[in-house]
Length: 438
Image (tube, rainbow, N blue to C red; front, side, top):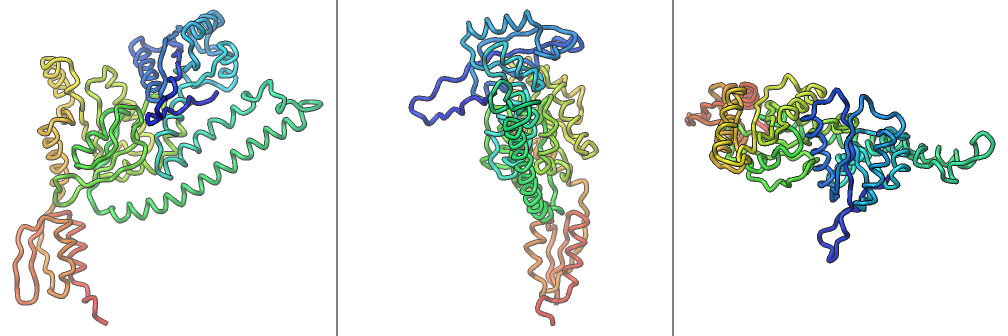
């Protein structure tokens, strides 16, 4: 199996898009609607990867065929369709075992990529930061390692002498050792980067933080841009955002609120990706509030919402305060459908925000909801700052709302509204000896 060629739009004569045939088995335990949603999602993954989807083949079975994923009759149908459509790849909606992938490739005579391989290739192309690239490479190598033997079947380098031993076996072990060494190297690099990330997060620890979480392509990055005014990357693709982005809520509030965008989730996301993207998901774990963004216009919104809830529980973030945001309400075909959908969501989720990230009034309402969440935890108190400690003026105005400022003979008295812990820290700093005191 080889990945499709990366498309380069800047090229004067871009190569033709690779043609892919979608192939999926519907188990008898899976509802028709869920199966169709999964198959449509595989099509969107294929499009994100640059494929041209030229057809679909499905089969209902009690269980996946242990050797070839499909039964023998369906394999012949797929092979004929591959030839008729001139497909160069077959994409399956389940993760295949190494032997299933090899046997299926032999039967249809084109490269086969399972759902996991497609997702990994998208992650590989969209990862930009050192941490994201290292995390993706680790999972790709872990996926590749058990497939080395199957990929080498029939090649001279895999054949040895008596009992199958010899140079071929040594080559396979050499490849495996290279993978183990590379994973160890990348893991060490990630541990170093994690230390840097912890240092940066420690500086933000006392600040109010909001993490945007949700299914891939739910509109998190668009919402991030609308709430912060920052030029974060936005694209109508799955997994457009893999790197953590932190920006300040705009217009700024007192105290200041930081927003972080996180990697989107997807059904049947390879477990290794969930565990390996610890750096990104830590932004959700350490947030004061989670904005769970849901695509209201997607007919599978309930399944997508449940997937996000499940992943958040898996990483230990299910107990954090959460505000559900039903986004893309403007995607409904008519105003009547939009009103009806809004009423239905409001009835089922009375505390949720129902909106479009492109409607300034909706964005303002969400901004107020975020600010209001943190306002509930603020206290009012007095802070007496000696004139020798006026270096605290900047931190005071940055972290708190100054209600009044009174000048006395030996100090400035501030009446503040802000987090109790922050005001307590400022009071302790104001009472500390002057900087130039010996």
